[in-house]
Length: 173
Image 1 (cartoon, rainbow, N blue to C red):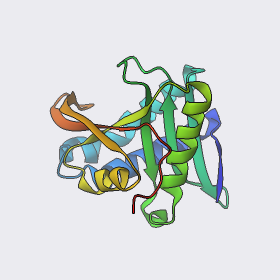
Image 2: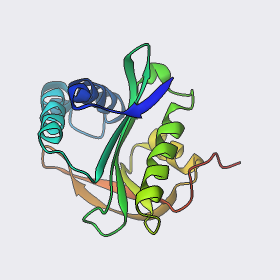
Image 3: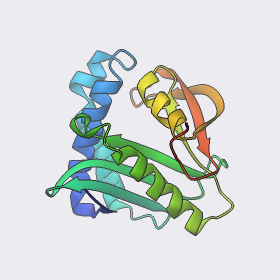
Image 4: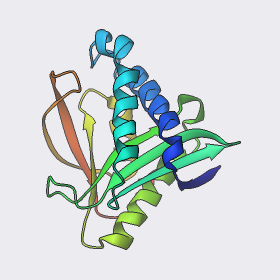
């Protein structure tokens, strides 16, 4: 497995993996209408915008095997929320889950945050109903901060949890 910074040319493939992940894990939380008809178009637009707007406070990492992107993470320093650095996305293709790829992406993202902003924590938000992802984050040392409502890309409100890491993510035994 290779881990490295993504190139802008790879953002379309990242968008497709992003949509694939959401279509699996957000089923029953987001509307079927959005997931079946608008998700891919929406994720492609998000990543096209990210490609067009270079941000020195953003790092996009990929995990690849045989030149195929099988996972990615996108992190922003100094998030506007004031909570620290935002791990905005962390997704691993379902065929590659359980191999430590997500943890490695989490650790590389955390290490980057600490190298750039030693005083900041890294946090993310996860849908409250997304129990599989929440279990993953908590298993690797994520700490619950708060629960609140956030707007979905199609305008509905859903409950999310904010989870943080103030120490390097490791398996909690």
